[in-house]
Length: 253
Figure 1 (tube, rainbow, N blue to C red):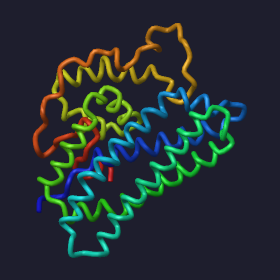
Figure 2 (figure 1 turned 135 degrees about the vertical axis):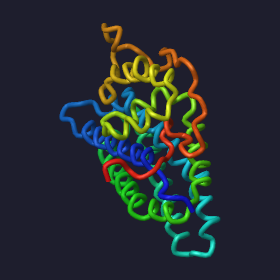
Figure 3 (figure 1 turned 135 degrees about the horizontal axis):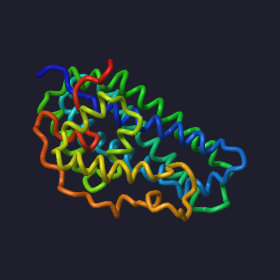
Figure 4 (figure 1 turned 90 degrees about the vertical axis):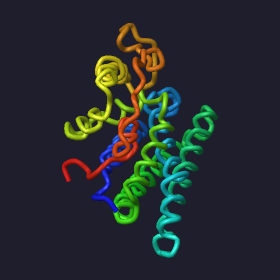
């Protein structure tokens, strides 16, 4: 077993999800706002769902099965893994219900507030549960090589979404976290992040209804921003950092 596994990016992802959950809660309590129209068109809703889906499916497909093999003779710990998967499934069901309401236009919009409340409560509770119980278990049971494998697969699943997800992930993160994450990029990739990905993300009004804007900067779309040189493979000990996989001890703790 190696020294403590690096979970910087895991916590960065959790913090970003909490941040977006707070925005989501505010959107659905705005007096006089057409909450359905906002969520149907808001870039923030799409980014939130994309990042959450990638993160949770990587855990469900790779991390929890890996732990299940390691902990096969420890029933109490296996129960915790079942709880992690069940919480993921419950969150997915609420997101699907929200999207069904949004697709139905005016029908069922009175349920939107309750559904978003359920999503925010369920997600924040799950993140706290994972940090309090699953991450200490991971630190105790998972080898560096196994952790690296999870990081590589997580990174691969983000893939072409990196130009959108990386600046979203680092929005509001501590200087130490940002530096640690960007240090894993090649210098050309850091330049692309600073001069293309980050400005395109900053131009988004994530949690307001999209509308035509006169400002060219405000209309920048990620898919139109040149990606530049591809990210080079990272070292095994830090694989997947740029894409929100998992690193060492949480900065500042």
